[in-house]
Image (cartoon, rainbow, N blue to C red):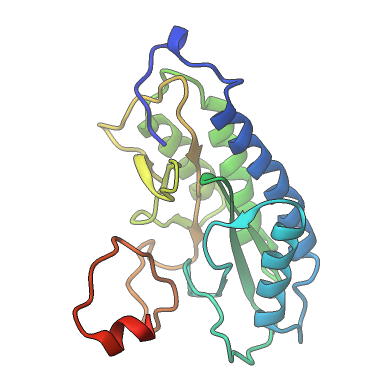
Length: 234
């Protein structure tokens, strides 16, 4: 959600912000509990289903299918219904979202099963550095510069074509984008903006490409279907 509201018009105790916070509290608990279940030999599907079931138990709803991305997969991989993949000695990225009545929270955590803890630490410390400068009036390019400086300092590269983003009502990705590197012309954060900051560190070249498998979909709009059999199927 990227709202351009004046400070005196923003009530941070309003229902929508309370629901953002409630979603965030649920998500923080589920993230840690789910990460504890990631171990060599554990099932991808069972871990994902655990997270989604736990979200509902705590009063939220999954904002999107739990993402479980491995090693060279930066993001947006998720197990299919018949997936029998298990974790090996690899780098695991868990990306989980929660909504409460459409008000969203989005988080990720890296679990290192590969024996390369510095890569995970680089992203974690980059996030901490970014949070230190986040406030109304800051330029998103400054946030990106903090992320880039920390990741560079560890000897890795930031993934430059993935960004953080705003969170809206029923909208997972809205403006503003939060870059993972310094940019000369960013966006100024306003009072009332709700954002997800998503540093990605890699020992590769720093750019991602689309994978072959697609398991996550969104309903863009509902339309009419003329064929009766097709309507019955839907």
